[in-house]
Length: 289
Image 1 (cartoon, rainbow, N blue to C red):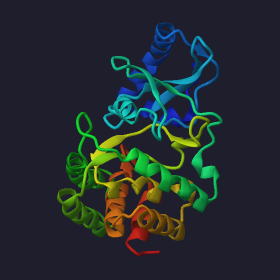
Image 2: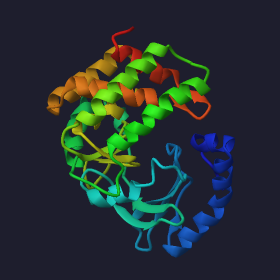
Image 3: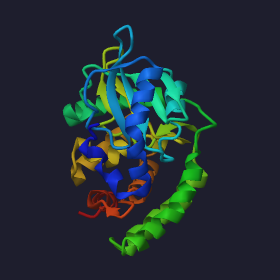
Image 4: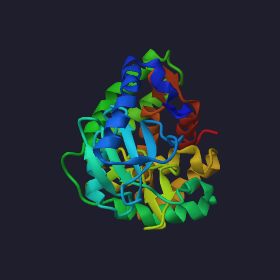
C-alpha cells in the first residue's frame, strides 16, 4: 500500500511503525464494512492520517481516514458531528475502535492558500464565526491544554538542547499564565485551522477539514491562520493576518497575539525536530525582525 511522503515521519517512532503495520488490514476492513470503492491513491496533504478517496455504493464521493492515534485528533469525529456540516465537512460514519472516519469529500478540493492573501482572509472572516459554536464535553478545554503546554514547552526546549533564546520561552510561559485563566466565552475552536485545511467545495464555497478541536475563547480561533506559512511567511504577512482577523472578527488583538505566541512556541518542537519557521513567527510577533 502506498504511504504518502507526508507520513514518513511515522517511521521514526515505535508507535508510528506499529500503526503503519496495521494500515493495510484496517483499510481493507473499513472498505468492506462500509461497502466502499477506493478511487485513487492516498491524499498527499494528510500529515496525521491516511486519507483515501472513496465512493459510496451510490457513487457519492467521500474520504476514508485512518487516524494516527494521537490525542490531538481524538475528538475530530465529535467536532464534525457537532458542526453538522456548518462550515466543515460532514461526518458520514465513525469507527472509534479502528480510529476510522468516513467523511464528505470536497470537490474540487482546492486549498484556501491558492487564493491571494486578502481574498483568503475574506473567507476566514466568514468561516470562523460559523465554526465558533458553544460546546462542552467531550472536547478538551483550552485551559487544560494550556496547562500541558506550560509543562511541555520548557521540557521540549531542554530536550532539544535549548534551540532558541530563554527569553522567548519565558515570554510564552508568562503570556500563558495570564491568558488561560482570563478567557471569555467558550466555543469550539480548532487549533489546526490553517489555510491548507480549508478546501473549496460544492455544497458550500469553502469547508474546514481535519479539525483538532478544543473549547476556548474566540481569540484563540484565528491562531493557526496567523502563524501558518500557507498564506505567506514574512513579518508583514503574519502581522497583516493578525491585524485583519482581529479587527474584522471583533477580537482583542493583544489576546490573539498572545495566544499565537504561546501556541506557536508550543508547536515549535515536535519529537526530536525543531521547526525554525515557528520560532521566526514568535520573534516577529514580539517585534523582532
